[in-house]
Image 1: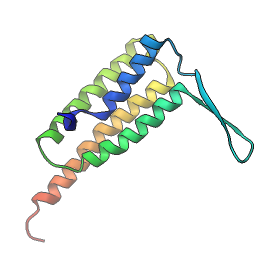
Image 2: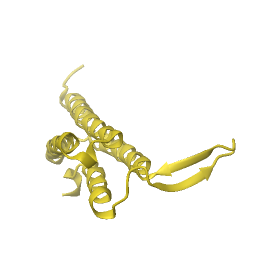
Image 3: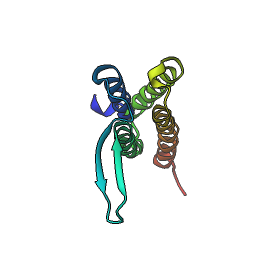
Length: 130
């Protein structure tokens, strides 16, 4: 069951929780880190969500190299996550931000890359001969 869950759904759910339950804005500061150069790096809520989304996208791409029924279901659910995120971006005011648009793009990349990698892996699995 967990193999079919699109990981990008977790990020969209986290964004929904932050917007509707915590009352934080995406610009709310989490922490600051002073770098060796002396520059101060400020990490905001939205930045952290994008960082998590990038890590989860990496794991999604690794999972898309498998061929099987759960992978196909995962791709279908990833498409559904993309559609839901796109509707939220277009229709709901709290989701009309650059950070959420970046999450929508990552969900789009998940769908396109997932199908592309799976088709390529399946073609390699079913090739006979040279």
